[in-house]
Length: 81
Image 1 (cartoon, one colour):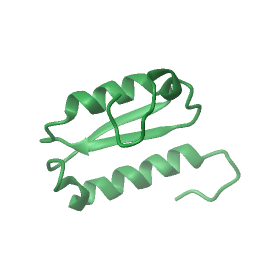
Image 2: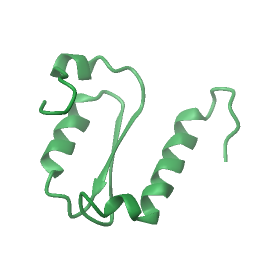
Image 3: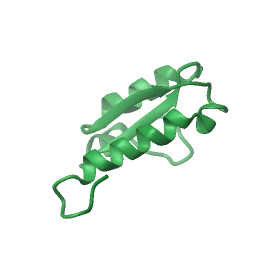
Image 4: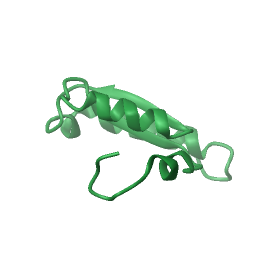
């Protein structure tokens, strides 16, 4: 998979933890995010408003991250929201 850090598909398939794959609904890189999510066994794939550059400012992104962290830490002895 093309990325800044060379990572093989097999390496991605071996990631044994929950991973959030979030991107802007108008992002031109949707296919790449879909490919990444398909390779990660415990991926959660979500869209938030915006494109590749503006999605980071969307309040929905923060909400998605908080929900993802709450869900993945539930039952692990950590406080939850």
